[in-house]
Image (cartoon, rainbow, N blue to C red; front, side, top):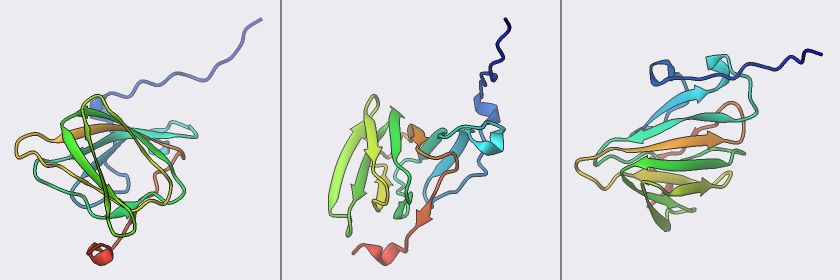
Length: 135
């Protein structure tokens, strides 16, 4: 009896797709996504913030996000007014619940931080909020 299985896909960095929703101050690259021809209930890719940069305030709608910090240091601010903050370094995991307004800040003057990101739906949701959302 022969069983048919869907193919396993390997996506290398030259094939990552920048054609995904973006937030100022950062770059998202899709690896596991419909635009890469991969049908999945999840989205996966890379996220990077350059030294000294910060993202705009945003949230991901109904999506939950799990990130693994590959390199660098980052501060994550969140809340109705950005009143909460946490710090993550290489080797840490980060969980961002659905609908939580947040921003990422790179405190380093020399090193970008990079995350592997997995989202709970196949197409990333990025809702950029006005800068004046937080004082």
